[in-house]
Image 1 (spheres, rainbow, N blue to C red):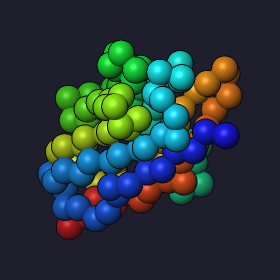
Image 2 (image 1 turned 45 degrees about the vertical axis):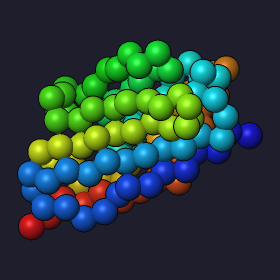
Image 3 (image 1 turned 120 degrees about the horizontal axis):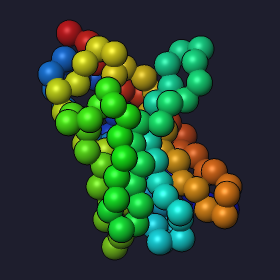
Length: 115
């Protein structure tokens, strides 16, 4: 069973930065891709960023230029660097990994952007 452990959420002022981490229980190379999602209260999860073990990335339009995902294959960890944060980025962020068409999820971490 794949386990994903997230960390790095918290409270930050608008314009600030946070870095989320997601540590996987097995090699990143075992996954087709990994991704970050966010979820607003009462809404479905929205994919924010996708990254492969090779480092290829794709981003939601509203975070392009502000968020950057990276991967450390030696640590089996992916990161989401979030800069120029806005109040609308406030959400619970989830790490996701896809392996053999099965999705695995982290426990989620709250990001709150507020003055």
